[in-house]
Amino acid sequence: MVLCLGAVCLVCSALLAGVNALTEAPIKEAAEKALKESIGAVLPQGGELSEERGVSVGDQNYVYYECTLAEGSTCYAVKSTVQGFGGPLTLMVGVLSDLSINNTSVLSHSETPGLGAKCATDEGFMNQWKGFNGVLKVRKDGGDVDAITASTITSRAYTLAVEQAVAAVKAVQAQNEQTKEETNE
Image 1: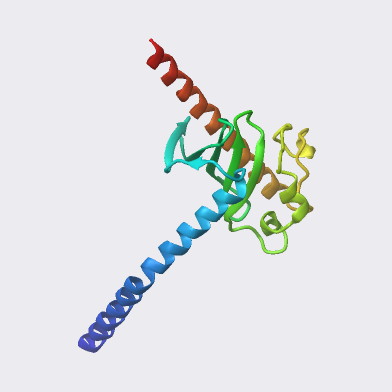
Image 2: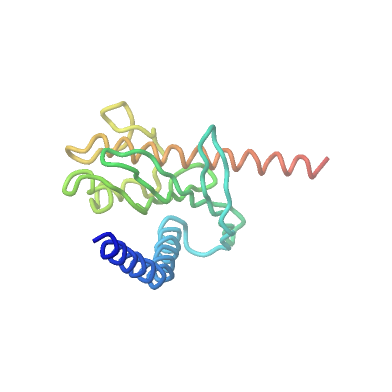
């Protein structure tokens, strides 16, 4: 019985390892494609996109991409993850050099279907972020963000992710300014 069970475990392990090896590359390609699409969705068209970079704000690390537009201005795509109602909520946030929001895109979420999951599908909620330059709090908390009906926790989490992306861009701009000053000295 022990030998039979051991053999079954060995065969199952080999099968799982084989399936993992076969699907690893397509899963990675799909994730990279989704990332590129989300960057394209949150930044203005055109310009030269940098490689992935990192910045720390407090104890949180952020991945961002810098885009230099034809007219010379810079905008940023920042990946921001916060805790939503159902689990992690990860966004790609496009931030312009004046710290206004160009657009947002949901990369992944674990929100309740039909309620918080609307953060990725509700046109009214998603469209309010295009060109947003107001107070980053839901209206219920004294801000300018219209929350998703019956999903205040998700709306607050989404808003927090956007706020953290703006803070990351502020840190990047401060670093860039410091680098310019050190170079000029």
